[in-house]
Length: 162
Ligand code: RP5
Image (cartoon, rainbow, N blue to C red; front, side, top):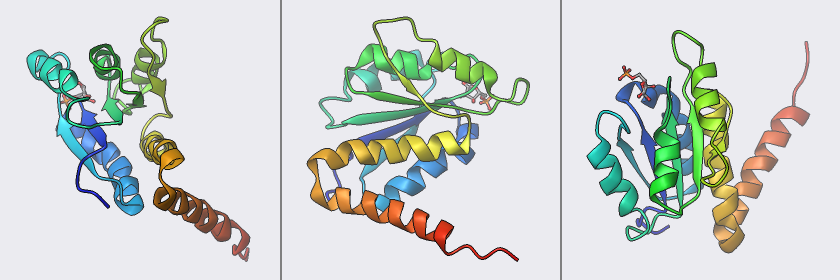
């Protein structure tokens, strides 16, 4: 595995890490190098521009962006770079993540983000989606994705009910 990050995980606040760590865990399990960082589109707009503007030259292939509330992080990232952006709506305290989901999924036509489920399942699936995409050109990774799916299926077939 190369140490050169190919996935960028960003989140609007350190409070999002509880959710976004599940994306990181999948990438670790698959042996995919990534960078992770707290960047806020509204609290640190200059950093957002700098990070998004240099994502291609740093070698990133996919971005996973988690944010909650008026969750514009993924959309702004997608505006700053042509790299595909996978959005993870964080479960907010007040509206349980419906606000985050709608903010992310309702991008006007032209600058796409691919939005996943609210919370942990979304973070997990965003990372699995990134792995499946990168596996198209990587046989080692293809095997890792296949193994993950086979292990998941085995858990189901091995289940013994009481
Ligand atoms: C968003 O505001 C973050 O993505 C986070 O989900 C939410 C709350 O942030 P904190 O107040 O916990 O820093 O920008």
